[in-house]
Length: 131
Ligand code: NI
Image (tube, rainbow, N blue to C red; front, side, top):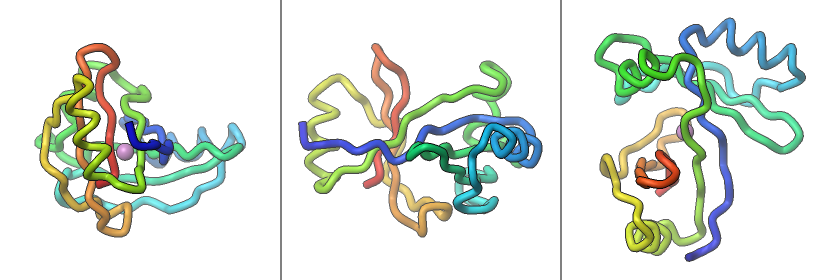
């Protein structure tokens, strides 16, 4: 497996402004204020603490990709995002190791338009790969 580096932990929240304030109270600093992702219909904000980056994701409309997840799981961390020097090789290896892509690499406005793809493992659930 090519080396994967953790980029962020994705955290699903219903109320992004209140969630941001709560993370700030825990000592996190806002790294990138709320950006609207019009492809996934979610608001996204990044905070950092102790070298960890948390991504707050909040659905803006009922047909957002995460509306169903939020209903089912409430406020919760729900994915870890990885980056790799050679994303294509990493993607190949992941699929050989039981991960199945649930979408295709799609630009992420909150990540300066870099492509991301989500994959599911039957053993550990969802991950995201910057592609
Ligand atoms: Ni993410």
